[in-house]
Every structure is written in structure tokens, then in C-alpha cells.
Image (cartoon, rainbow, N blue to C red; front, side, top):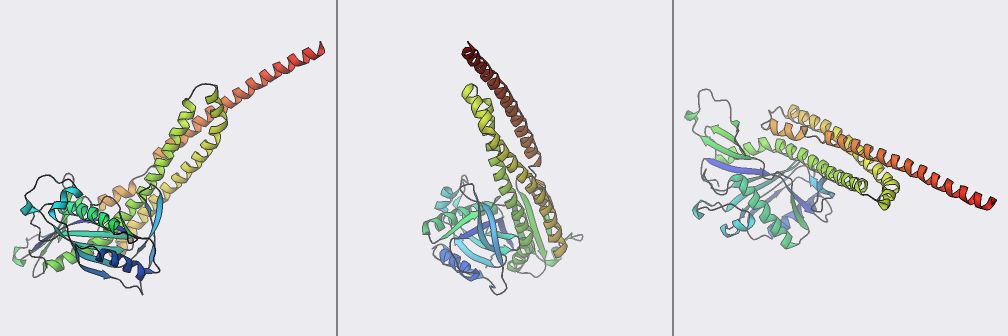
Length: 371
């Protein structure tokens, strides 16, 4: 039960990874067993309709920097309350000095599985407006705590996040008497811009319970936030591939910077294949950039045309959708072509020099034989 007429929460993207499972029902059951083994978790509820549920493989950048796939359902919820003692807060994150009476130690966690992927709401229980930690910092506490606890359990369920987790917005839902409603009330949802973290405020007037207002708010936001994290996930994969391309270019440049006969042989005979492989990687990445932009535009258009809802975070969606590495990839492609042209010139010089030397040797041998 929420004690006041206001509720505060943060948003993130928690991804549960199950190593072995037989079906969707078993996938949820494995996670339920693991979370149920954590002593500080209460009120665990797993909601799923496996008869009508689908799922798919979600590609993620793993801890080793490689792209890996993990199953995620497209429907269902995992809800629980978690208590994180104040003494653990400093170990899980740096929050600065605070009066312990202000510290929030209980959090309601609601992981929702949407069409575009998972999204999590972390509510600071019974928090005053000046609570510590902030709702978004609560996402960090829960994230770090769950990650460590699941790792210690070693039950085949691990935990990843897609950043930014927390989402860079603080969320507040409140209920007020109907007579307090302003005459020109623009509606319940508003995003207030702030340096750093914005504030999202859902304000309701009338005979509503705060629990119902909070549920309505999170229902309203869930699919849009899941789309944001889906677009972000694609950006992270493209960024990882770009880092690999950058590393290959740096190696190629080193070959061309080295001096001496041995370096010349390496440059002439070993870099051609490297350059071709790198060009193929760059071309594939360029195609991915174009496809990602098209996917993002279509996904955003379909999301809001299907739901008839106005986006609350249009700017953030647009920023992540428009993020492109195409210009840098084109610059890398031009650099590789330039370097390979230099290698070709070195090869021609080498062949001409070798031919001249061999011709001179052959002439000397012929003259020797003739004498």
C-alpha cells in the first residue's frame, strides 16, 4: 500500500538471461525460483499468459564485448518488493552524505515485457519528495544489488542492463482533490526540462487511489520506453562494431607507419588482405546504418499511429533514432582506400626495383658466360 498521495519512480531496462529452459513457462519459472531465493525480496508475482505469448531472441552486447542473443518474451510482468539495507548503499554506489532518516530502503520493482523488449519501473516506497536516493538512483541500487545477488546464487539466471539505466528522467505521479484542478488544466502528463535529469509529472484530480494512478501512468509509458531501449540496444551493437572497425584501421595505419626493409615487405605483402577485409566490414556497417535509420523511423511511426498516443519523450526517441555513424564509416573507408593505394604504389616500385636488380644480375651472368 502506498501511504501518500504521491509516488516517485525511476525507469531502466533490466534483462534476465536464463542459460537453459524448455519453453516460455519454464523461462519464467527459472527466474521466479532465482528471485525467490533472494531473502530481501517479498511479494514476488510473475504474471504470464503462456498460451498467447510469443518471444524472440534479443541481441545484446555482452560483458566480453561480443554480440550475444538471449530470449525475451513479448508479454508478461515480474513484480516484487525488495529491501536494500542502508549499510549496503555505499557499497552499491556513491551517494554522498545523507541523514539516514531520509534514506529509502524499500523499492517496488515492476519488470514489464513489451513488444519492443523489457522495461522496468522502480518505485521508492513511502518516499518524500526530498527522498534519498532519488528515484533514478534507486534504479542503480536495485540494478547493482540484483546483479550481485543473482551472481552469488549461481542458479543459471544472470542479469544485464541496457543503458541508460536509469533513464534520465525522474518520475512523479500524484493525486489531488478535484476542486484543486486548475481552470486551464492541459492534461495529466507533463515533461519539465531540467539540466541533467528531466522531470515527468503525472497529475490526477478526483477520487483516485494513488495505486491506480501509478498503474495507469506506468501502463501509459511502458511501450514508449520499451521502444526507446530497443532503439538504444541497436545503437549499442552498431557502436561496438564501429569500435572493431576503428581498431582494424589503427592496426593498418601502424603497418604503413613502420620504416625499414622488413616493414616494406610487410606493408607490400600483408596489408592487402587486411585492407580488403576492413573494407568489407565498413561496407556492411554502412548498410546497417541505413537500415537502422529506416527501422527507427518506421518503428516510431507505427508505435504512435497504432496506439493513438502522443509521445511523451519524442526528443529522446528522435535523438537515439537519428544517431548515425555513417559519416565516420565513410571517412574510414576513404582512409583505407588511400592506404591501400599507397601499398599498391609501393608494390609497383618493389617489382620495378626487383626487375632491375634481377635484370642486372642476369646480364652480368650472361657476360660472364660469354667471356
